[in-house]
Length: 163
Image (cartoon, rainbow, N blue to C red):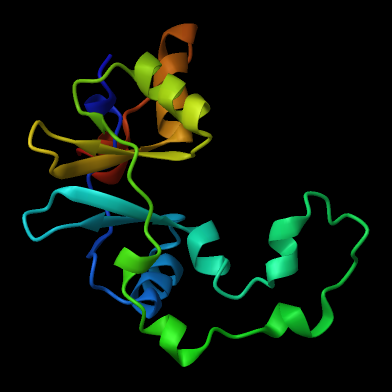
């Protein structure tokens, strides 16, 4: 089974010069957790995670510790707003190098990539590196469980039911 059979093709992508505010609006409007960043030709050049966006307002001391179970409330920090200059910053300043696979990648290898890199969403590209879809951890897991007995329906069929 190829990952292209299980990917979603309706993806949200922004150019590298889009602002942080545009990314925030895309996350809120589309309820997504990963912003895909493409160049003018549609090639995947980066990703912006929720962590990248939220780190803009997180205090530096949060990065120093691993366990904050002892902290019940950060008080005024929880209503902290980004500085205006942070909201207009281009995504190219905060994006990460993308981890992606080609559409002909097996779902087993795609799942291994998710585990190896500790990610939940995997962009899918063609031979030229152009973005063609995205597969979530759930999409790939369902594909892997398809032979286990219960029928599984690829995401495209869920989005475009035939009558």
